[in-house]
Image 1 (cartoon, each protein chain N blue to C red):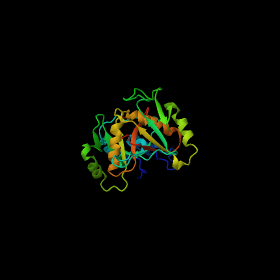
Image 2 (cartoon, chains in turn purple, orange; image 1 turned 90 degrees about the vertical axis):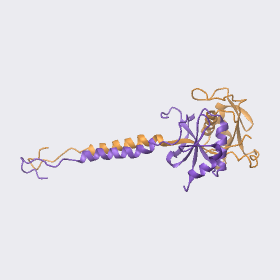
Image 3 (tube, rainbow over the protein chains, first blue to last red; image 1 turned 180 degrees about the horizontal axis):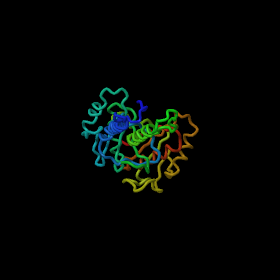
Image 4 (tube, rainbow over the protein chains, first blue to last red; image 1 turned 45 degrees about the vertical axis):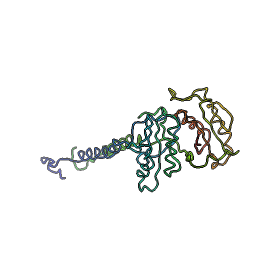
Length: 139
Length: 152
């Protein structure tokens, strides 16, 4: 760009800010897409004071138990008789599958215990019981 | 910007790209954080067709939570646990508030690989109450492994 002659104007449109904005929008939508496809039903998670980190929900197999005791694997409602089968299908060929249980806080322990039992019968050892940090916002 | 005299240089740092990058990072973290799960790693009850749980030996610490000593069958309003809730730790009935101290007493002197708490919870108990009690028990000692025993 030579500005030696004062009379000459810059002819090309500066597209750098435009590219910036477009890239930001692209990144926002890339990140939002999985959020919009949030797995599973709405569950009122139990609130405790010091739950531990259980990783990203996208890398876990989510077993949800809604307030009526209905079982879900990821975003799919499943019959309790077909639970083990559906769980194996959800695992597929993942090398190190981890199962977490999102149980509704209004449930009795019976439903949770039965779900843990079913998860064990499907061949898993150890499960994460998902809670919500008391006082935290969100769902 | 006046470039008529060639000797004058632009003296301010352009912060616009920096602000761009920081804003993008802010947005990414705002969106990713709610996707993180929090909870408790627990062992599972034995399958009902397998032989029952191993007998509680001297060294095994068993926490029993039942509706007779801790009558919370529906989700309690608000946080915390009712003061009249008692649990049995190693066959001794204690108020639930004493749980962290008693846990430290029982497991504090042991090597970390023996930090195991067996939890026998009654089916009729509210799930959230069970998790809150487990949370309390874990707060007393580092790295406790939680194993749920079957009730039936």
